[in-house]
Length: 195
Image (cartoon, rainbow, N blue to C red; front, side, top):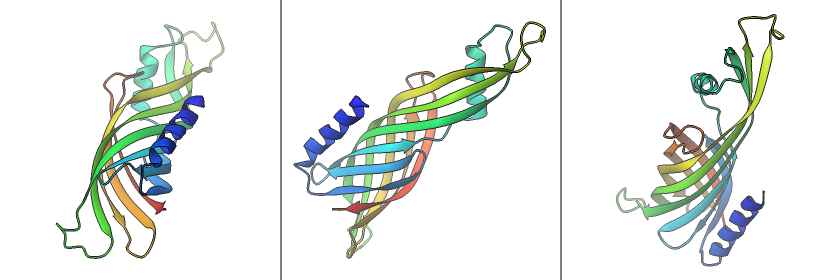
């Protein structure tokens, strides 16, 4: 929690030089609250706090098979809860009004990089071939923490007469912790209030 507080303070420190701040909701993967501030005409910093979607059942099954609680354990399934996601990003933005002959509002294209931390609580259900050794249904509680870089591209539009920015983006997240090199495609739509 103290790292989150430090990150927010750092972004707030940079915001003293900024000309525009935005706060809003992001729907997609991950979804949550987006805080964005312009650093200058072309660069912006963003922090997103929310929840990420769990990985696929196959992903968790492979993780279980690689680290069984008992050598004789046979996987039955899993339950995922308590998803958490934190992203810190830097983006380059360029106005596209001239390319599309837009005279009202401001359409921007953007691309950037960032770091992402994702965490979920896992309950693995399993059994063993010899039920006499232990109860039939067993549960192994774990935390799945993923951390790594991300890259993203997208577009945003600031309305002429409303202080509202709508955006759409696609990105790619690469795990460095837990599963080195695992790639996850992410995307989101959202809106932020600009002040």
